[in-house]
Length: 632
Image (cartoon, rainbow, N blue to C red):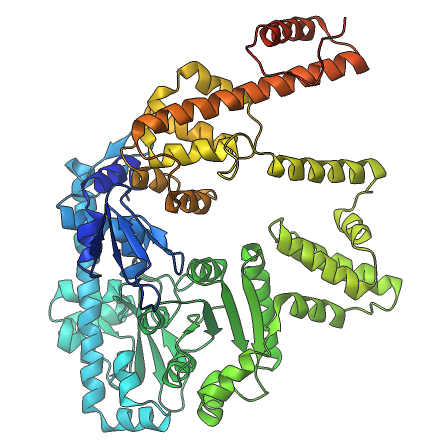
């Protein structure tokens, strides 16, 4: 299997791609000075606020905040995952995707390994084409089956929703699909690889072979068929619902090279088609639940596929929305499923993301309830969905008696492994405060108990001092006040004018290791990247950070107006900003040495360093320190 897509290849794609041409084929762009503008394709507006820069190879909407490179646009507008956006762009440019070759550099699809990759790609393409043919076959069977159409009508499915979700029917036959599509041995092997037919037991298979019959039989028989589609709308699997008595009620495709049920969400493709701008997903448990909710206007419903909610489901959902609502039956099984979902969602919860739980009346599921109440009343229930924090506390409190010390201790013991799943940050701190309030204990004491170690006065003082230092650093601004810190200015200059990095000598890059400001590591890495593999554009620089936590902040700086208007001025500003950073760090080092000398004395190496810095200061090579002279 190929590895990660090579960064050098991504750089080449961005160098060859024309963002104006690609976006212009989808959105009517109008030239405005050196840039282009249009009404944003990602939200409704009448006045253009969507701007595309051919120089930056970057787009930004001042209305909704959408921004990115040509790759991001393909991902958002064409609803493609990152690898498929790369393949799409490469195909347009007539290029073969190149991959990292196990740390040995970049390997194109060539030679023996390339032939294997090409063969695998051909096999995958053939499976996609097969799944499309099978989906059409099932749709045709539904059109011909009066009984299946009657069942769909009885379940309240409209002709429009059947068409939208490409619902079909698998006839009550052991070999209808084999007869229609499995005409030769190769086709039968492909059907088996797609999970659509099952190989008979060996003895029966051999006997069937002697009798001239197939060694396979159809997996789906006499079932209403729900195609499962990926984000590009390609059929990757099926779910079949029995139309009368029988078990299992729902039968899913097995795991295949195309389908991994722990990662897919049924209805996600249809949801993205229905809504350009998504902020919320409603996660339910069944195919029929999803389809009926969409039919009643709740076109942001998706379903897990015969499995509990997994971390992969949650991560995938949060890449597209900031709010998840899980809907479960109100019975014991529904509550158990909700608790499993809570545990899997905790590692992905943080500030800016919201998770809630909607429990339905006993005996109801989303399908039956929305059919009886209608979409508006069902959606009104969402306003009463329980926030994750309240549900967690409610469930733990139900297992303990928090009116007494023993119950509180038991509550904390149950909460500890759950809270450990949460990422450190604002959300975790707020949840701790909410739990402390429920237990009627001070929040610092609760943190002490959860940590299992004493919180001393010295630790509290150190934490307070650290917070104070962060506040002071945030308020410090140099001569470029109003443009962010010196580090932020330098990073912005490198983003907009990456060639300016050549003006920074290697010695200064090494000296930047002493910079302790939060964004200092980003500045150092940007300079190192430019030295090792120069980027020619802002877009190339950004794509190197796509999977990094700093990516969003870099995009914000990329969307801002650059500090200067040409590369020469950028190089001068960058040199000046870095020199100020280094001067400031040396000044702080001088001050620390002076304070240490006064308080406890210096060793010989520190004395030599202090002497050198003092000489530099007196010679005017350093800004003034607070002390006018060094102690003897």
